[in-house]
Length: 61
Image 1 (cartoon, rainbow, N blue to C red):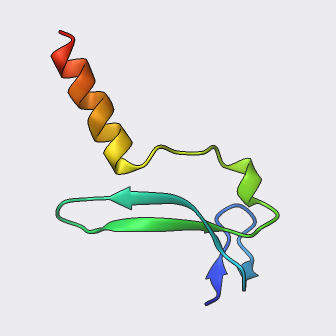
Image 2: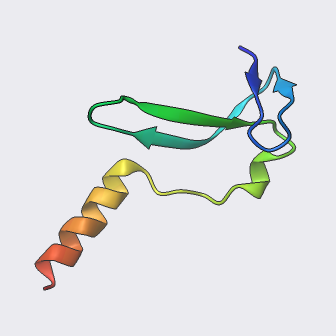
């Protein structure tokens, strides 16, 4: 599957997922990068890690 790299805007036959957006109503989105540009993007926590962090913040109040 060929995707366009978010950073260099060139098509890449080896896309790397660098971000996934999750949405309740719109479904979400996926951001791809080529293997050369993928290290430019910071590692992002998954949705379960974000939910857990919100839960812990609420309990600690």
